[in-house]
Length: 132
Image 1 (spheres, rainbow, N blue to C red):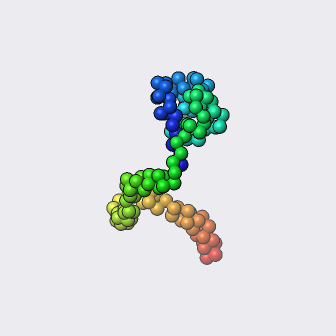
Image 2 (image 1 turned 90 degrees about the vertical axis):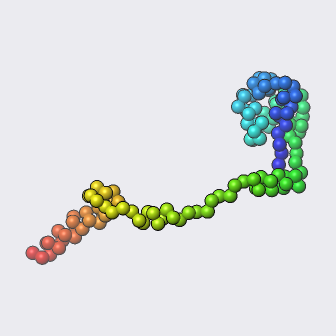
Image 3 (image 1 turned 180 degrees about the horizontal axis):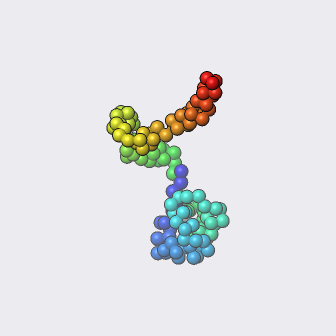
């Protein structure tokens, strides 16, 4: 795990992100990404390190495994746990209010239109034809 030192180096020189971007011939957004620790190209790293008069290695502060483990432990302790799933909503869904008109029925049981249509369109005429 590595932490970027670009912010520290930039502020030591008294530069803004815009100034560094201009001197490194990159966009301000690229500097923002680099300072946020996001991936950037090797060419970008070389350009920024050249503008800051440091090596590419000096742009990063390498963290050893024990420090990384401590950092992760602190972060995991500080995270809030996800709330357990509340299944009371399922009970509320089952306890729906009664249907008072056709449109409420149609909205809740719209899928019944297909089997009823099949019955009326194919089975019922077949039965009537068979009974004649």
